[in-house]
Length: 135
Image (cartoon, rainbow, N blue to C red):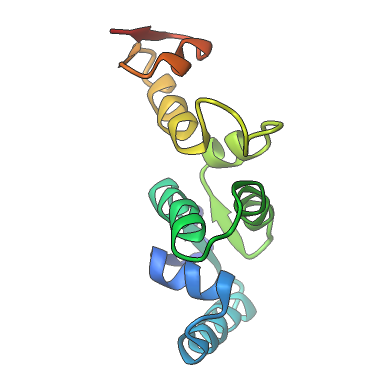
């Protein structure tokens, strides 16, 4: 995290910012983020929070995968938000909404790639990913 990070968001705050519900909490979250940004800070969103948000948008808010990916990609490119380089890289992949393996599996794989060790999985779709062994 950069020194200018003023706060780290959890999934509940990020969801309220993205969907605006419940309205009162969304407004509180927006005001808090605005205040942090006006003082020169940024907010950090972890890969785990992005992953949880991705699933929550789809399953609880019925947001299509393509739209959920677009929202998260836009978020990762925002000046007020800091995401990991891994998340930013994965979110720039084309057709991520229909890719198999999908967004979260690609985040996991990219994190493991930084260790230089192979990822073991039973997910046959992961054979497309480098340094991966299907069991």
